[in-house]
Amino acid sequence: MSSQMPKKAVKSLDQSEFVVASTMTAKSSVAVKLTEVYAPTRSGDGQGPPMTDFDAAQESNAALLGHASGEVRRTQQVYGAARVQVSKARDQRKQQFQRVKEVHRDVRKSVEGTHGEAALLLVGLEAAPARTITAAREQTLEAVGRMRNPELVAQVPGARAGQEPLDFEHLANALEAEVLKLDEAMAAVKNAVKLADQALVAKKQALAYHRRVYVNVARIQEAYFRLAGFDDLAERIRVAEPARRTEKPAEAPEETPEPTSPSPLPEEEAPVTA
Image 1 (cartoon, one colour):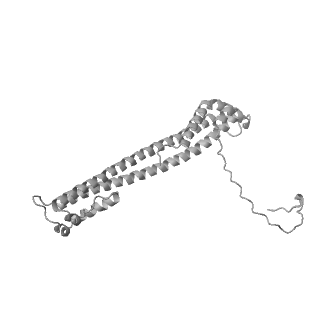
Image 2: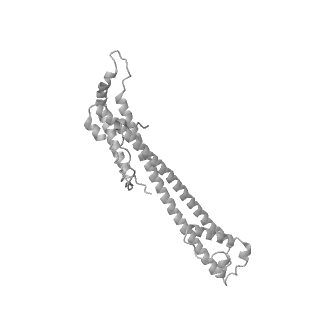
Image 3: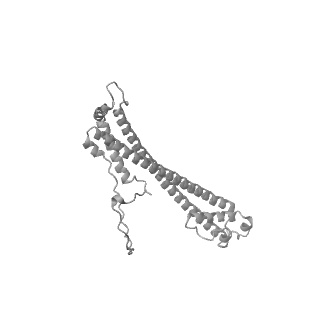
């Protein structure tokens, strides 16, 4: 899922800018011509529909299209920033995952070095850290629970000669603290992804809205330009119709001979059907 703006959208924005520039540059001349074109709709005594302010109408069209383009750029920036936050959150989660494994290894070495290999099974440290986040988290929490179980800790062999017995509650607290930080990092990733998804939806909506505004404003301005006699300019902003897909006609089934029927009536005598 790329954070870059689609090429089609970039092209549409470029076309929009040209329509806006063309409209604002020619609007006064076009307005004068259109007023002349619509003059016959009003009688000499001022009766008839009020004359449209074509200058204001064209300026409104340009403003509407400019706003739609601005929304595309704004939502694209928001989406890009959201994607950056997702990447940062994932990096932090990865770093904390590594930290959980490091502390797990350190505690494992301490227990084995102080109380011997037999103690590892009792406190849930018999295996090396798991390779996946979920597995490592559950593995570490299992060790924390065992270290806080008085019955299991009581079965741990005594400390080797010259060493002080380990404080398993202290070790459990150290492991649990790292798991809590990992939980926070995982929640941060989930939240960042949620915001990125929302930003993507807003971006797609802005693109769809911009496309609708661009196509219709361009068509309105094209009509204005043509009515005013600016055919060259109208042609330059004309929205090309998308190519229609043509489907290959299905092969006709083989015809089976039918019984001979009377000749059809001449066309003028054929019955009318609804």
